[in-house]
Length: 89
Image 1 (cartoon, rainbow, N blue to C red):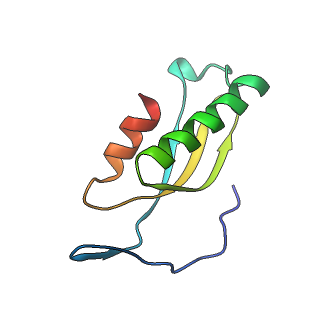
Image 2: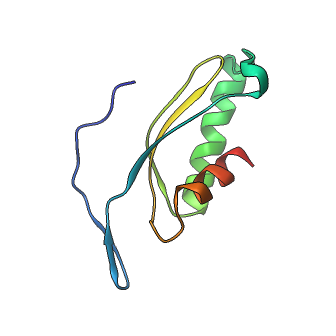
């Protein structure tokens, strides 16, 4: 997975300045190879839509046939577990 150039782009909210980037990896049950062409394309669309709706950024994403890599930038107040829950939900 090729990471984008290290951008030190800080985000601001009330009482908080942050740049928290997380590398998230998850796979389907039993690591079956179900993320094929059309399913992978739809998954990318859904992940992008979820990120826009919930105010976090997906900096890079790669979907393999049996697992997903996502580089996400999210607000530390909500935490990475909230992002993972939204993406996998």
